[in-house]
Each structure stands twice: as C-alpha cells, then as structure tokens.
Length: 188
Image (tube, rainbow, N blue to C red):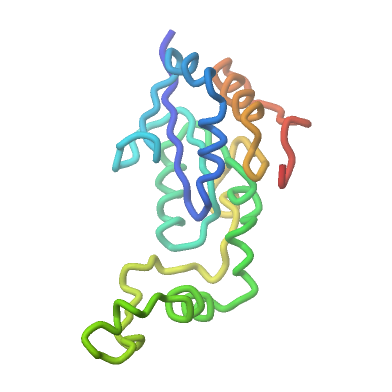
C-alpha cells in the first residue's frame, strides 16, 4: 500500500496545534509506516512540494505572505484540513481586528520595543531609526483559512486534543472524511 503524503504548516498561530500533534505519542510510530511527512516545521523542507495528499494548516491568515502561502498550498494539496481554532475562526490572531494595522504595529514594534541596544554609544533612543522592512505586510484583519481557499475538513480546538488529531489522520488514511462530532470543540 502506497503511503499518503502529508504536510503541516502554520500561518499566524502559536504552534500549539503542532505541539498537540506531537502529543499523539506512540501513534506517530504507527503513522511512520503509512505516511510520508514532506513539509512542515517538524521537517526541514523549505519549499512546499508540488503535490501533497493532505495538509494540516494551523493559524489564521493575517498577512499578505500568509494569503499567498495558503493559496499556493491549496493549489498543491488534495485535502486541506483547517487545524485548530485560529485556522477556523481567526481566534487569537483575530483579537487585533478591531484595531487599525498601524496601531498594532506601533504597539508591538515601537511601544514595546527594547530600546537599550539602540541607546548604546550615547545615541538618541533610535525609535525613529526603526523600520518595518522585515515585518510581513499585515492584512487589515486576521481571517480564517476558509475565507481564502476551500477547506475540506475542520478540526476545532485550541489546540485540538491529540485523540481528535489521531482520529482525523486515521480516518483520512482509511480514505474517509472524518466526522469530528464530540471529539473536539472550539476552545477545547
């Protein structure tokens, strides 16, 4: 039997869903015979493969880079799983949605910035020297994945419990679309 190919990725999220994935413990060993993990933060792939059977996507779409990334992943994925509450509802990243982007950037990168390094050598505080050229351009709002691309399976939870993740992966391996039912819920 051919292995299915699997990818995982995160957009704007905390990586808690990936930590919960690792908590499926010994099932990971069983899965090693059934899946090829091609891409994700748990492996060293830098470029999303041309085709993946299943991709678990954690996190909300918060930046233009996230939007381009999820569109690319959707194009190259057979079944896309919104993995966790941030992917499904924007959850924690969406907490910034009621504030203008400039206010969010100012709060995070200026008001809360550590300025002692900029003050070395008797120079001024250096706040005016800070630039945002390395910060991805934020969308006006953090939004769920399904507002940008088609999602095939929704796996709620913050993070989803390991048993629910194991169930979803097992069902997908059996060629079934999993019915999550009571295995997980938003905020679980």
